[in-house]
Image (tube, rainbow over all chains, first blue to last red; front, side, top):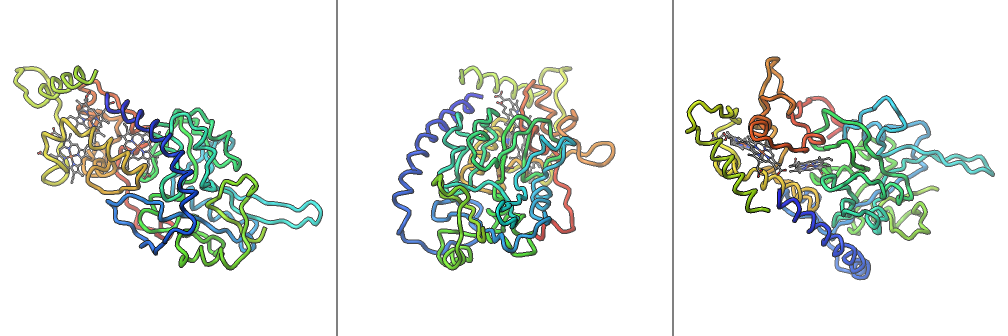
Length: 246
Length: 129
């Protein structure tokens, strides 16, 4: 249909706008006046950059061998197994870090880091990879052509390509062959004022989710109090996922 | 060539809604739940694609989750039951979205990703929602 094409043109144009907007936001953001944002935004209101969603993982509380967050993600988003693990979609996975000298191991969940400066968005030729105003990095599968540049660009190997037809998807998580996908911070839940499924499922309280722009939020308070870090912080991507205790 | 496409659409739709061609088979469109659609019926016949495509961009990029033009809601209201009493998928010629599309040779890819059947409401725990 004709308006599809114009939509895509608009995306292309908006892609350019977006890249400049990101730069501008980087300059303005610090020090702007911030106020508390009510958790459940009305359904007809667009997201804004007043909010920046983020997650803090306390690796000290994250148990080796526990994969409740991974399971919860699979259930929530309908990530079914194909029978070929090497092509299964993985939005969150558990990794174990080992200090070779001391032998000390740390367990933590690895997921899309929802970068403020996402390399996947930079390389996407169609504008399908994008960052929502509230910091959630998504794939607009309607315009994803499955080229997988974003998968190459992601320093965290956070994205998966769908190789086979999928049926019986969750109504809130459409997924299909030939497109790339990754953690959405459970955007459909966040938009209703809920936490991502992994965070709700973690009995250890190892994951905190919230608005990093709101100084009163639990995550902002925790980030102020504890020592946290960004994985590959040297890349300067300003991550939405922070880790404590590594 | 939007002009031609619009003309084609009008022609197809005239054909669909006015069965004046005696003896020509016209699709039997299953009725939705409730009394009326989210917009005027005639408007929906001609413009349903505009509404859902617009909603798609609003939801995807701006996080707008109003129900009125949401594809999920179309599927809920327009579910058609098969012989087994369960909602049919878009593979079935009886599916609401298939009836006209098969008739008018429209192919859409939406249901490669979107479920064409309403979600079965589970009463049990869904990740502690």
